[in-house]
Amino acid sequence: MTTSVFRKLAGPGLLFTGAAIGTSHLVQSTRAGALFGLALVIVIVLANVLKYPAYRFGIDFAHSRGRSLLAGYRELGTWALVLFLVAVTPLVPIIWAALAAATAGIVTVIIGPVAPVPAIAALILVLAMLLLLVGGYRILDKVNAVLLAFLVVATLITTALVLPRVEWGTLVDFSWTRQTAALLFIVALAGFMPNPMDVSVALSLWKVEGDNLLPEGAHPDIGAVRRSFFWPYVLTAFMAVCFCIMGAGVMHPQGIAPLPDAPGFAGQVVNLYREALGPGAAFLAALAALSVMITTVIAGIDAYSRIFGASLAIFQGREDVSYSRKEYAGFCLMFVAIALVVIFTLLSDLTTFLDFVTSASFVIAPLVALLNHLVVTRCEMADEARPSRATLIHNGIAIVVMTALAAMYFVYI
Image 1 (cartoon, rainbow, N blue to C red):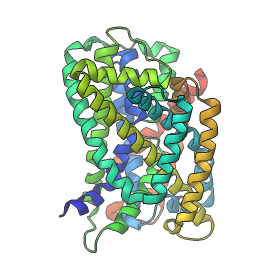
Image 2 (image 1 turned 135 degrees about the horizontal axis):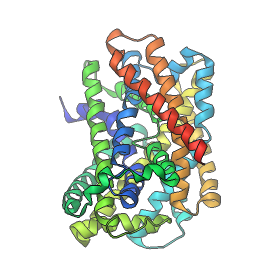
Image 3 (image 1 turned 90 degrees about the horizontal axis):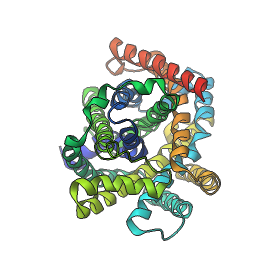
């Protein structure tokens, strides 16, 4: 199997990882370690474990039917597709604004405060959109795999070096369960951990697009497809734990509170690498973090532009994959324009803004997981692509747990 074919087979999983190792890891996981030591590692692991089936259902359905989960929602009834879009639409511009702001913080750390953070964030959004409109999936696929490698290596080395500083007793410290602020934070932590749940729909669209690029006879069986998603998913979860350990090993013992502004917090993250690896490696790690955050912005814009382009095609009586580049570009422009308004009017305290965005994303996660569950149990699929009974039970438990946490969030806010 050629490298090109292998990368196309693994494309959706790699795209998922590139989209995930951004705000959920660099910001939220690091904050969890800084604030609570290793106490919230269990939350990070559980969030990844519980969400896995709903993401994989997008891969399963796309492989079996050559269509996205949006087509499955339409088969359940127009109500399902409309419900999904009503839940997701308000979040799109604020998610893009949050991703761009976090990226702008890293830019400021690397090159200095050459412009206000909102201006840099706006420029990042516009450039990311232009890159997608010029190159589409092929550029996104190529850029993602390359930019991830150094950050993974640097993070693994840094994690190993800070292990002796970690206060291991915090791993079994559950005092946070009696703190309202901590309970609200775990919802924010789980919201983007490892990705928003609606990224499962984008995964199915990426899978269909990737399959269309494969040469004749190169389409894998369902087992290979699931493995090509599972291992990048495991890497994503492991990296989240690593960032938590980094925060727990460097910031928590010194009582360093995460700064609320984007450049301030980005500087703290870079300092984690500097303390462990030295200034040269820290600079390279900052560049790698910037690269991965840019990839996250690109993947986020691509994901939701595809989702809304495909949804429009379905409402017009066409196949979900028949949306045009013009329709895709239209949604890109519309949501970027709204995100720019959000950046210049609502963005001041990055961490508070991120907590709001990620918490809102988590609140709709049980709904998306339920819709995905209904698609793989009620829509037409090949028998071998249907999830096992154990996987369905796994997803059912996840829906119950996420619903309970979402209810708790509304009780405490």
